[in-house]
Structures are given as structure tokens and as C-alpha cells.
Image (cartoon, rainbow, N blue to C red):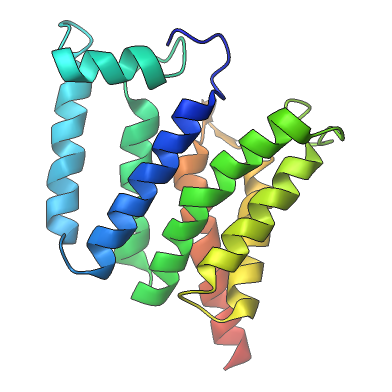
Length: 197
């Protein structure tokens, strides 16, 4: 990527745009989990091929939107697709849509607000700001309420933003928030729904 900072606004806008596209495709039944899986596999193949070859369109996206020094080109996008697919298959549709909404908006809004307006460092991750987490929580909660009741949206978004603020490693492999945010949000919303019944 040309920018020194991986939190550039173009990358955050692209994240939101892809999230909205996939939400729309799912809501209007224009895509199935099988088609999304095929997209994920095809994207993975392109990612591996781009290690050896400069693929024109793929290279443009990697050059302009990819984080620096990643071991697998397009890793964030692949994990974004995997997070959507897993969430869609594991949870009821309303919770899945709310979780994908939280994934789509919480992380990029958190980074944007934290970077541009944040003053209070997060004690769990000094690279992030509390103001960003609050903005990500509030916006993603409001938008998730289109799919689930407020208590589910608020709880799912709150805990997902907490997990976004911590670094989780399993056997020295850092878990990406494109996976953790929707899965944590969906799990919390499902548990709250079960508790309230």
C-alpha cells in the first residue's frame, strides 16, 4: 500500500462498501452461502497467485488498499468474507444480518473516529482510542437495530467492540477482527435472546 498508515480512509470506505454490498445481496436473496464460499475460494486462489504474478485488477487493489507487510495478499478481504460466511451459516438470519452490520460499520468507524478525533488511549491497546470504540459501538448498534431488537443490537455491538480492542492470539497466530467481530456479536446476541426467552 502506498500510504504509511493502514488506517487510510479509502480502505475504511472500501470495507464499508463491501459490507453493504454483501448485506444487500443476502437480504434480497441474490447470493447463497455456496456462492459466497465460491467467491471466497476464488479470492483465495487469486491471493496465492498474486504472490507470484502481478494480476492487473488484483494488483491495483493490493497496492492501494492492502496493509503493508502481510504474509498473504488480500488477507483482510479473505477473512472478511470468511467472517460473513461463518456468521451467515452459524446464526439465525436476523442475528447474522445484525452481526454483519456490526462488522461492516463498527471497525472502520472506530478507526476513523479514533484516528481523527480520539484523545483517550485505550488501556488494552495503546494504538486505539476510546472515542473510536464509542463511535463504532453507537453507530453499529443503531444500524443493527434494523434487524434485531435494541437489547440484542446493543449487547452484540458492545461486546464485539470490546473484542476489537484486545489482541487475541492462539498459538502465536493473531486472530483478525474480521472474524472475531461478527462471530462474537452473533454469539452474544444469540445468548441474550436465549436468556430473555
